[in-house]
Length: 177
Image (cartoon, rainbow, N blue to C red; front, top):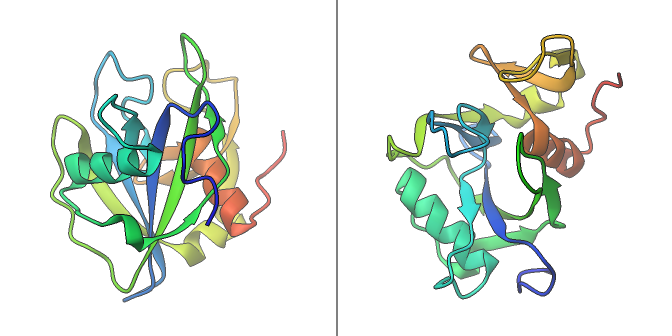
């Protein structure tokens, strides 16, 4: 397990919850509409910016998971720290995000903070690996002629940072423009 300590420049963290039962799946949330959130309305992992009071970025991921989904995990339950990656924003600077994978025996119930998220979904890993579901498509808030690799989830594309992390981690080749 590497990169748990905040030794570089990441300023945010996400929790990638990977359940093995009843079907192998990943937890995603759809963010609430918020004009201050550049990922407003998008599918994402639970997560957010580091607070000064957070011990490290793993603490950030655990705190955000609890705040957004009412799921309490402990530090020892992290299975893997993925490489930090840049997340784009419509305006302002890029944010470096550290993803932490938590392997769970079963899917956990989410109780969402409605200020943070409007829905959650345990998406089967088989669906994420199904290349026929991956396509170049327009995304909310950007010109319709700009196409991005994505998967449609309940009428909203899963794209951008979360999509890239999932494709890299699951070794799925996204469609090319």
